[in-house]
Length: 205
Image (cartoon, rainbow, N blue to C red; front, side):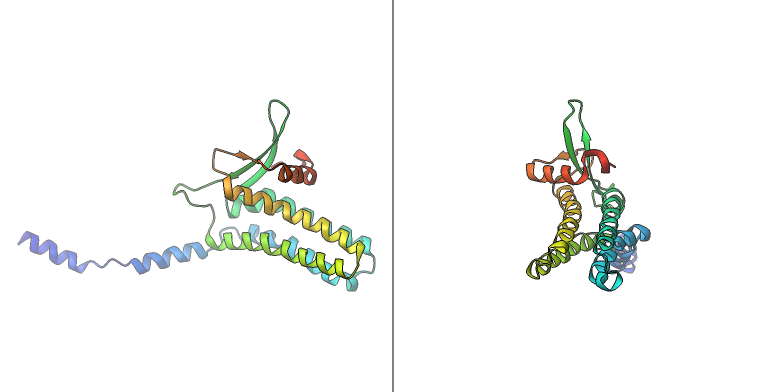
């Protein structure tokens, strides 16, 4: 009779796996850092818009050049030091060791379950902005090259450099960085590129 009662109780219990999956999906769709998500895209999108509308905004190329580079510099700093850490738990920086050598560090932080920091929605925003915008600037490079707009070509090359630096750094974090075990880059060209762009410790976290 006891076993029969236990069996009857078990039949009344429904395992609602669908509800668990829906709850998990809801949590992953939440944007926990709306301000960081906004500024992750703001500067780089505005820079692209200014580039496209520059002939209508101002006939002065120097003003457009300074404005776009300023926007992308703000973008470089905010993505490197703020949004990468908050949205996906990744960061990279430069430090000087005891021997005075420059060391590039790439780190990926995980939560207690071994998963990436942030939600899936935030991760999509982060990687979408990080990858798509350099592709757009690459398109601008070819349009400037084929139309022989040399002065615009210089601006586009500078813009690509600022965008690709963060992309390269975060791809290295994604590929090899582990919490508590920062990995220095083994790519001489990558290290040289980052060193020239950031000026060693000037953008250090």
